[in-house]
Amino acid sequence: MADSEQPEISSEPQSRHVTYCGVCTLPPEYCEYGGTVKKCQEWLQENHPTLYERIWSPEALEAATAALSVDAQKRAARDAQKKTAKAEAAEAKQADKLAKSVVTIKRIERNKKKFVTAVIGLEAFGLELKKVAKDLGKKFATGSSVTKVPSGGEEIVVQGDVSDELHDFLLEKYKDIPEDNIELVDDKKKKKATSG
Amino acid sequence: MFKKEINPAPKQKLKSSVQRSLRQALLSTYPLMTPYIDEILPKKGSLESMKLPDRNTLYVLDNVPLFYQQDTGEVMPHLRLVHRFPQAFPTIRIDRGAIRFVLSGATLMAPGLTSKGGRLPVEGAAPKLEEGKELDQKVDEDGRWSRELEKGEPVVIMAEGKEEACAVGVLVAGTAEVKAKGKGPVVEDAHFLGDGLWNLGTE
Image (cartoon, rainbow over all chains, first blue to last red; front, side, top):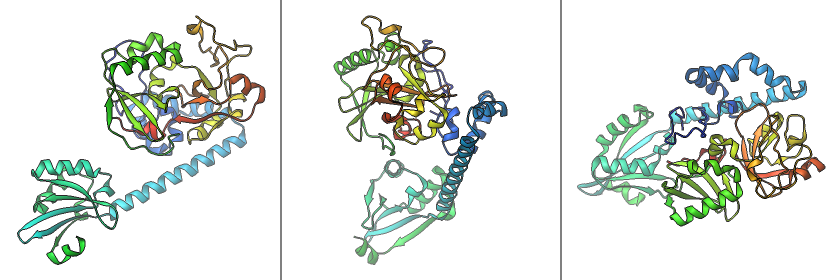
């Protein structure tokens, strides 16, 4: 969706190609309602300068707001401000959460010499556990599944002791995860009994 | 209808007979689509369907969402399709002030259409669709449709000062009635820009 510049398969002339904003996915003229106006503007300026000129140039803005009464204008401005503040707060919160959330790689002893590796906390980084589990299974050629934990939430369980490789793999594949936020834990048999 | 985010569900291939009947249904609902139908639904294409919450079905072709349908109701175009073929659907236009409400999922009310920035079908427009003249209806330069739209008809909602459509929905009041009464809901449960259906991944 990000790249609607590409000509589609149908080459007949009737179909129009609408450019969608890469940030909020709406058509650029609706970005002002998306709540991420600042980012949208930057994106548009970078990727479609002509469109940017048409939508966000001072003249265009003036023409757009001229039709509204002063009162309505004020209200709209206030509304927009509120929305931006909200979006910003949400973003800051998200960043904060991301910085705080930790991915735990746990080596769980299953049977003296046998281990499984549990990965906890990937969902905080916006990853889809099911897909990641599949990838991990492919990478290590072992069983890998998403299991529910009793405390609610889900974790990925990979068969075998792959904790070190997994650490490197996560770092390499998902650049969003800072190295400091990955934690290796060795779980001994005792604890296993409690976690089932 | 799709205010909440929707999680993608697995897609099923549609039988060609179902595809054919869908095509028929589309042409009868949207006669204006006739010139483009082969481009929208190529005969060879393999159409897929995706089940969504509330008994909605989404029709997807090559990972591009085309239509959705609630239960056995009207087949409605997805907004991305509307953006590709804006000429194929009847439109009404809302004024600038109403945009932000519609884009947050509010029911579209009559004042948003009857005010200066709104556009309803032209005065004295033909109240009914005449037999054989389906292809003659169109939007004029001012953004007014050439005939009155009836209750229950699917309609595309444009917005003042914008080129692209901002929502799609079914009329709960005919346009003639809206003009006469000037208040009350006009389109309920629309599919609008930025809603769950719009953000749904169809890869």
